[in-house]
Amino acid sequence: MGHPSLVLSNPPHGVVDVHRAALPLGLPPAEAGLKVHHPVPEIWLVDQDRTAAEAATQELRAAGLRVTPMPADALRDSPPPAAVRSFRFEATGLTLTLDDGVVTLRSGERFTAVFCPPRQADGSEPGRSVGTPLSEALRPTGEPTLTLGFLDLYQTSEGRLRRDAVVQGVTEFSGLGASMLPSAVGNLIKFAAELEARPPHAHVDRRLSLLQARRRTTVQAMPSRAGPARQGFTYGTPALTALLASLRPELRDVSELDLSSRLVYLTSRG
Image (cartoon, rainbow, N blue to C red; front, top):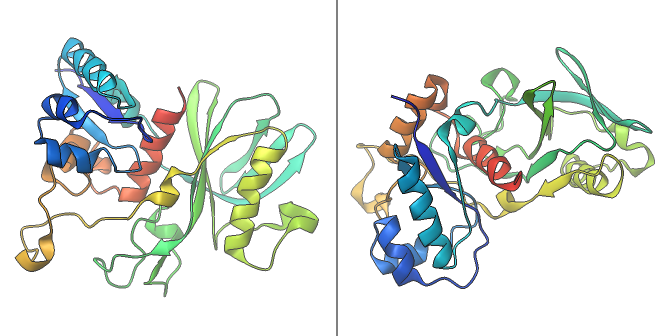
């Protein structure tokens, strides 16, 4: 059996008729009203029947929602990030130095940057930052209360999608030259602004700035702390975990920020 079709939310939405949206979402109107206010793309619907997914897309759009249908293979094939160690702006574009070589984002080429500021960890995994987009090998030690800010650069090169991550505390920012700031966070914000202001002129998507990271739900969770039940394919639900594992085993334990970066890219590219 092939991979299913996905319908992704693509906020911000317009004026929404929540009663009309509730039916294709399979939710009561009150819960649909809460769901449509989530500020970051999510997987809303999954269907093996592409025609049914397209019909649901049209109905949600008619209800005032911005949604993006796509094959699940697009999410399956989205890459993990590679750490950018340093960079420099040049007349021909932006050159990135990574552990395995050098990549140049050339002026005139189209690419998308997904920006996420640093944030408080949720405390569910003691002794480590929650949601950091990099692998354990790149995670600094002794930083249990903050998730590192990052900016993921997505670009198609030689027919392959790349995702290169400029990360607070990992990337060296001397490439900003005289604009370099004393603060690592300030440099990350400055770098995002430079991407928009000079060649190769990235589209910087800042929707992850609005995300409040959530824990996965577990059977061990105390009822008093569980909060409202999560519906559908919201992050932390068994349904989402099963879906991601079916697409690619290593996606099973992906963090919310990592998954959200992929979904932001997939919805912003079109």
